[in-house]
Amino acid sequence: MNLSKNWRLEVERDVFKTLKKMPRSRRDALLHAIKLLPSNPYFGDIQKMKGLDNTWRRRIGAYRIYYKIKNPEGVILVFHLERRTSKTY
Image (tube, rainbow, N blue to C red; front, side):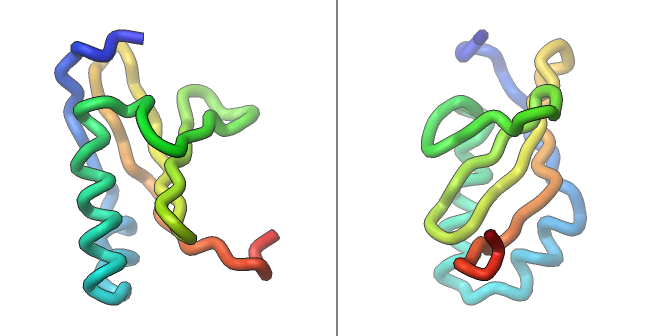
């Protein structure tokens, strides 16, 4: 893992649409967590997704941020954001 690498952050449009529907306090916390990803994408309550190459999820309370780490390009792609509840499982 190259932690000193300069990562570039890309966020898909659907993530912004989901954020727009949330209360301000949740939205601000999630945006802060997303903005911190380029400094160290392997930090926090993260887990590698089984069966998917370079796909990770970060847990922020009841929300999950799903992202891919494209190592050779130095890109972090945030592609999905969802709220997890007891009915989700």
